[in-house]
Every structure is written in structure tokens, then in C-alpha cells.
Amino acid sequence: MPLDVLFNFSARSLPMANLPPASNTSPICVNKRRVKVEAHTKCSYWALDMLFHRLLGTSLGIPRLKLQSVGCHLPCCIPYAFNIQHDPSEMCKFFHSFRMKIVSNLISDLENVKKVYPNISVKQLDILQDTEGLGKLVAKHDLVMSMVPWKFHPQVFAACIQHKRNVLTASYCSPALRAMEQQIKDAGITAFMEIGLDPGIDHLLAMECFDETYAKGGKVISYESYTGGLPAPEYADNPLRYKFSWSPEAAMTTVLNGATYLKDGEVKQIPPGGALMDYAHPMNDLVGFNLEGYPNRDSTSYKDIYKLKDCHTVIRGTLRYKGFTKVIKALIELGFMDQSPHPKLAPSCPPTTWKEVTCMVLGLDPKSSVADAEAAIRKKLNMPEETVHEVLALGLLSDKKAKLCGNPFATLSTHFSDILAYGPNERDLIVMSHQIGVEWPDKRRELKIVRLVIYGEEGKGRAGLAMSRTVGLPAAIAALMVLNGEVKQKGFVLPFAPELYKPILERLKKEGIEATETTIAL
Image (cartoon, rainbow, N blue to C red):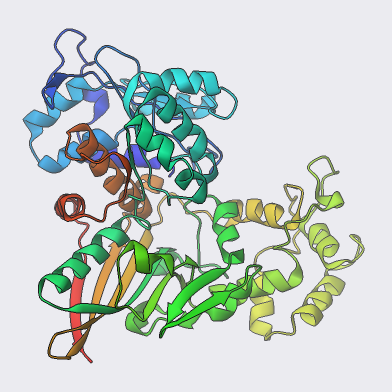
């Protein structure tokens, strides 16, 4: 999650620049103990906003009394979550007791943070290169919020296990993390997982609906959930109808994944490599947005995770504006999604234009004319002219210099980070739709549609993005719950139990993040 959440959280709570420094002599009591908190961030390369270009992830730390802290990508999430209590006097006390430190591998980002929030101290650290430094910081904290890209979580978790410190992340509980489960239990720590938007809010809303159904004697017989982070319709103004609020390379990788889901009692599998785009279908319950959806990851695992013993259909998927998948399919056909090393796309190669890159990807002489390249694209695609036009509109035959990244996929992803980024005054849109089939004891069947639609705020740059709020705020609330002793469990904790999802949903509602539910008789 990008550091723009820092601005989102702080702008919605008391301005830190106007608060006096935390006192070393009179810290307040939190959960019956005196604490002084500093938060830091550690980073790993992600696509960020205009201010924070390529930050890595991070972690948020809550240090013990009079000790330094570890840090986080969301340094203001704890006070922001506390703001949910809507008690200015208590929040003031909270700010006075918490000092924050941002730890990043990019000094320029630290300088920018310091300009906006002079009361925050900063430190430069690369968690991939300085594991000893990471360990020392973790050791001084009670909680680490790990917001690094998913593949780097194990390094952070290992440090938390070694020093017996609680950890929280918005990411999926990956196989690499799951393999550490026994170590986490042996360390006696809490590892709060999957508490962002998706995964996160999707769990909260689904479990609330499931439990309400069971409490009334019903059975859940089908579950389909789709989520999309999109530009607001007025800003979906490019061939993909999409813009990147996070790493384009990471986002684009997902379209190459395979998927597994359960449909009418039968397990369906989609192979990796791009076949996923062939399974996109119109989202008829959201006709006003003109969306399409396609499955993602392994949905079948959620039948057991959610304990959906009566379900014949379990599908979790991604939402995009209609037209996204056909352009992605064209890019796959042309070879731009190839992740194999390409000798002429190495970073050490001479400066190369995008027309030359496209020619090389197509197997043409780099000196071929634009007309020849266009003809080759049309021949290879054999798609409607509209699709060809949209592919060309991505600037693939321009004279712009390409940033070569070793292979077509990475090079294209970097290009997208330039041309498909959110503008400073643009807003995004979060759409989440759960369709839950229910059967009652009298054999009546209903379809419950739980929908969350959140728009970003214009004029606030990345700090106003709905993605920042809906990923960062649940994590902030959960972090505060861990600190306040509301989370008692040790080992892996996911937000499936009522004592977890109910208070988080209630606090989200107070911040304007609330779903609607409609019921249709079947």
C-alpha cells in the first residue's frame, strides 16, 4: 500500500504539524500501560503517487515504553483509527503519546514526508539489504504492520518471530507465510492477516451475511464475490479503461495467473498464461457501470475457509470496465506479456524508441517503418479494427524512449506506470459485489446482494484515492484492536469471527465505508 495513506489518514485527523512533540515524561496510559509510540516505514518498490514515485511496502510499529520503533507504510493509521472514536480530547492525548518515524529506502521520500509532517522523524533503511537493522527495529516494538509487497513478507515475519513481536498485514496469507504458522504459534505472537480491502472488507461483509443467515436457520448455497479498484467513470479515458494505484507490474501479473472455482458443484480450472481473459463476462447486476468480471486465484479454498458446507458455487473474481480484457488479450497475442529475458531489451542496451521495441517484440527489424509495424500488428491480431486502434493508442509505435527492463512484460509495465497513472486531481472508484444464495427451512430461496461502492475525493491526489482509504483504514482499525488487547488470539488471525468483524465494520461505518444489501426472491 502506497505512502499516500499517510496523507489520507493525517488529513482526516488532527494535523500533526500543529501538535507539540510527544512528551518523554508524561506518556498516557493505553490498555493500562504507559507507552510511547513511533511509527516507521520500510520500503520496497511499488508504483506510487506523484510525490512518492517508487516506494516499497512497509510496516507500522508500536514500540514499548521509551524504546525506538520499527515502522510502517501507514504511519498515521493508528491515530486515524483512533479518530473513529470521535473524541477530540482523547485523540489529542493519543497524539501526544505517539511519536512516528518513517523508515524508507528512498531518501527523497523521507525528505518529502518531513516537509509535510515535521513532527515525524525519519530514517533510511532497506529491509532487503539490512536484515540486522530490521531485526533491531522489530525488537523495539509491540506491533509491526507489514505492508511490503507480498513476496517480502516472510523477511518481516521472520524478524517478528525471532523477537516475539505481533505482526499485521493486509495481504493474503500466502503459502510461504502459512509455512511459518507453527513458528508463529511457538513464538506466542498474533499475526493478523488479510485485513485491507480485498482481502479484508470482503471477508467482513461476507461473514456478516453468512452468520446472519445461519442465525435465522438458513443455508448458504452459493457465493460469488467480485471486487475492482477502478478509475471513476469520467477518468476511465484510456484504451484499458484502467489506471494504476499500485505497481503496474504486480497488477499486470494477475492477468497471467490461473484460477480455480466451483460452479454448480463442479470444480473449474483456468490455466495460467492469459487464458483468464477468455472467461470475462458482463456483470449484469452492475449494468450502470458497464463492468466485466473474471475469476481470480483459487476460490475453492474459501468453501472450507468460510465453512460453506452447503455451497454448490464459490467464485471470487476481479472487476474491470468492459473492454479491458480484449485489449489485454491483444497485448498477449502480440507478445508484450512475455516475461522471458529479451537480449535487446536489457537495461544496458542503447536508447530505444517504443516503435523499435514493438518491432523487436514482433520479430521485425527495429528500423521497420511505422506502416510496416501496423500491418504486422493487424495481421497477428486478426481482431476488429477498434481493438487494433486501442492497442496503437497505448503509444506502442511512438518515438518516445522506452525504459528497458529486460523483457517485454516489465518494459510495458513501466510504460504503463507513466501513461496510465492517476492525475493529481483525479478520483478512483471501489466496487465490491457479493451475491449470496440462501435457502430457508421452508425451501424458499433468495439472492442477497451486498454491495460496496466508494468514490475517491477529487483534488487530493493519491491521498484522496478510495483505494488508500479502503485498504488502509481496516488495517488501522485492526492494529489498534491488537494494541488495545481486543484481539486475544495467538497464531494466524483472520477477520472471520464476530468479535473481530463486527467492531471493524461498525468503525468503518462511522467513516462512511458502509455496504448496502438487497434481497431478491428466487
